Image (tube, rainbow, N blue to C red; front, side, top):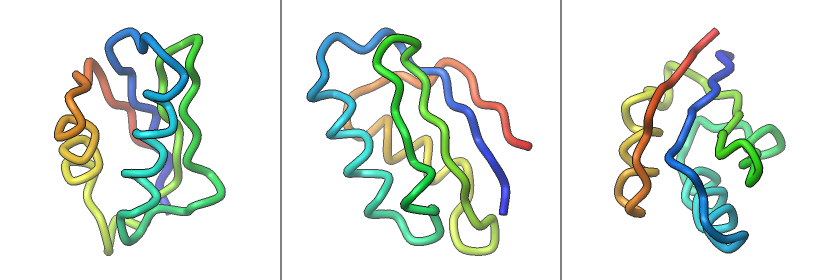
Length: 75
């Protein structure tokens, strides 16, 4: 398992968080319990299985919703 922190453009409403969390939880390979979107810092934190989903796929799922990914850090 890898951990990722994704910095997004500033989120403008709490429903944005729910849309992003919903999209991420729909991806295979993401640990459902760790996928969290922080409204105040506009960051997404999650654990994922690199063998099942790539960080690019995760970023694309967020971008498809219309949110810009500014920076990603994977550990």
